[in-house]
Length: 461
Image 1 (spheres, rainbow, N blue to C red):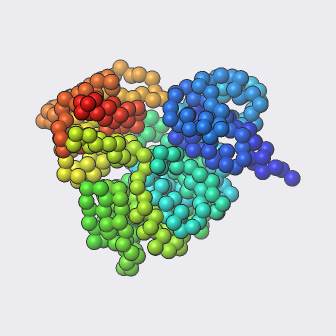
Image 2: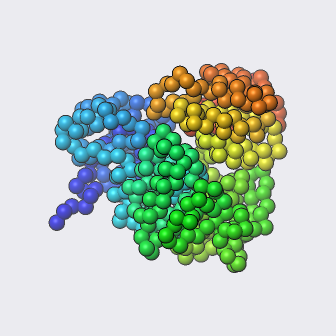
């Protein structure tokens, strides 16, 4: 008889282990009894935490680090010519992408896959919070941080909540029994031709659901609405629009949260109080509540799980307040996300000073006008240089082009500050008591929050 997968491949090496998705995978594999090691060239809090957990992490990629491993796993950010991947191939060690291993890891479970261009991390975390309150002891692998730790754990129950990423069609490796699709947008256009191809791929993802599976979709979103007529299975829709099957009624919003009654069809399920702001989070909560209803979870656990949820790291995260200036950090890196995040910021009643670091040259080039339009919801804007991440620098696009488009449209309260290090002092000179400084981007711009708070603290001293 063949050994179970993670007994045959008990020693795993993760290349690019410091990324949030790989970090979470490492903890889950360790909990399954695997011997896990990894490598990452970027020093980070994640690498420090992995080492404290007993996982050996090399600070450089070196061929000798894969010797003795049963399996080498790489993240989507790792190039195919990476020295460790090449060495593994030469040694006859199997090499797989994170997405493929995630598909195998979740296969024995009743998997709830949360997909969507925007909102999937928060929705996944809300779903996991509901399941915790329901006593299901579910497993979870989510691309974000909860209370300072990556949101990944292995439970004893049959359910597994996983964030399903459409980048490089990774989510097609999953075979979930339940799927949530929050939004379908023109995202990751470095690996999709256009929005139509993105929509086609989401249809393929949902087509993998079994006949007994559950499908929940956010029909407030135009991309989801275009997809709905192509669905060959029952779908439970949610959103704020009256045509949705699951809706929020008697909605009351305030600066840092909301309260509403969840209604399914003509039936009131119950009242929810959220501790995270913005209408986008009301929709995220409705998605999790809709899936919970399909799983026959008592609404008391739904209300408790959503009510106790305090947010995911870098999702409108309050980093501190000094001299009356509130500093908030957010992962928003797409125009739709910027729009939703700025809407939440404006709901606080404060003057909003936005800092934005574009992420990827390809995304910036494709969405220059959309970025310029979405950022104008702030009272004042600072842009810094593009964070290239996996892409080489490209001379034909820069963040200054967004600034030019904003000024041409009549918005003048915008400045391009190419050097990240210069932003704290710029902000210190521009901000006044009562302001909300909103730092947005998927790169390393979150450092600016620390820098600004340190500068404000020094000014007090």
